[in-house]
Image (tube, rainbow, N blue to C red):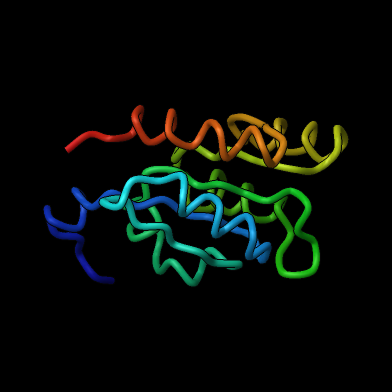
Length: 128
């Protein structure tokens, strides 16, 4: 397991889990240049749990079912990794949102609202 450095901990990064390229591009455009967007469809792509922890928050597409299962993602994050990184979900219907609430996802938005709220999330997580 690699040990994160102070510089690694100070990087401004957030994760987007989706295959929707238009959403990825719109979120990237809404974020300041100094923030790095990390796109993946599997938490393992981010590395070990301590590397996942280096991301300030995670944006999770609840309309994804072919590339990954959003319920599995939140369960792994919260129960297996025991990480309390904020998870902001977008899309999905009321049933999946209710399941995600029970699995301890944080907030839920439609796609347009997620893009509009991204600057607010970045301001809240802009420490260091």
